Length: 175
Image (cartoon, rainbow, N blue to C red):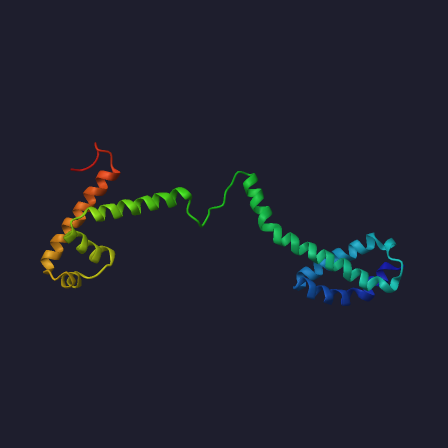
């Protein structure tokens, strides 16, 4: 069998089929070259020259499938290589320690807020948690703006003391 004549006769039709299988021109060209090389190496397995086109297409589809598998595994292989070198990729998710610390801080802040006298707690929740304006907060609590500011100042001061006492060692905590 004359391989060159068969390849020249069928390569354009096979290429078009590989374009559909591979999805793009560059991969189809690479796959066709690889398929032709494999076909040349195994030409002794082809018993009838009339089956060359179908045989070449079959080889090309397998090569295309292998290429797609390699491309799908590439990110995993790259990650394995990085890990093998002792490198780690940064994660978008926070660590378990950070999550626990955040939950502990929220619980501590909630305890600090609950420790406030009710009049200070109401002002603090409206102004600093719900972020209402000063006049709106005073109106909702039916107090003057000056009284609201005074209560908010005392609430913030008491919260700071509570949190300093809970977070700082006794020898460092401000008095």
